[in-house]
Image (cartoon, rainbow, N blue to C red; front, side, top):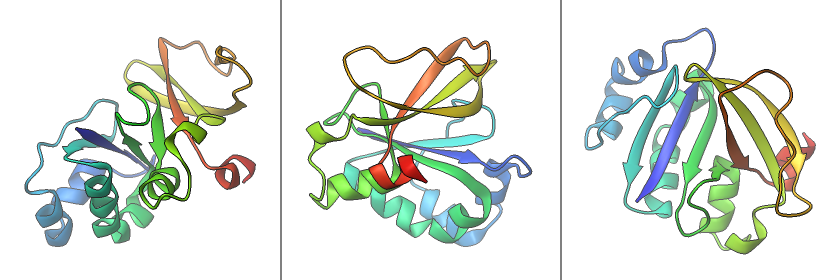
Length: 150
């Protein structure tokens, strides 16, 4: 199963914004909504294509209410998420799954809240420690080179 996690903007209650609007509510109706981190909405889809299609269906709401759209695709990695742009590129065969692990955005996690990200480049097997805050754990997101340089 491919998972999608939407991270809400700081000034909105994401779940409320999504379920209070008919089109978004209909797009999410077949999914069990979860909240793995503060102000997030996560669902499981059947495939990478299904995840990207859901994000495309929700795009109007994502632009307004979401800071990050993340995809966890087991055929790419069991632990590292993909940005929406990278997930689309993998789905469209523009980037091979094995070529996705170089550019990373690492979020700190403290008390089930995602903290500001740190951008790192993978040069070996070990990642640099997240050092922006004291954290309980981290969440690693693979991003495109363009997102990394932005």
